[in-house]
Image (tube, rainbow, N blue to C red):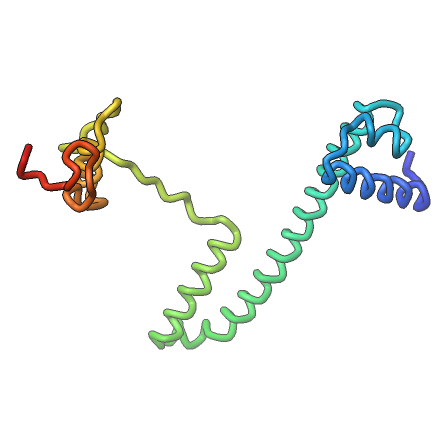
Length: 162
């Protein structure tokens, strides 16, 4: 049975106090006593419900925002589309940027997969290595020059002593 507006307002007020007390570091035992919950478990469950409700509200807000942004992108796309179809390269570039923005906004692009491989495309050797060995691996991966860093073993990073 749906709650009345007065009951919903009471629940919202109690949950606001619950969150405030919990953020202040109070225990669920203290919160239950302070706010009239039957036990600490009831206070804990109500906190979870409050957070879930808030998450649902935020998801709804995000959905509305996304829809508004899509409508703006539609209007902009509609404005430049005829020029892009006529071959105007600046309009084509604008269309592509709008399409890219829409793909990002709506999560249409597949995630980029990156992979780190070891020497000759093989597996990256793992183990308890020295700082010099780790610097060498970083150099092999193309992320830096291992001779630039000072090593624990040599103290200079000069590879000529090896």
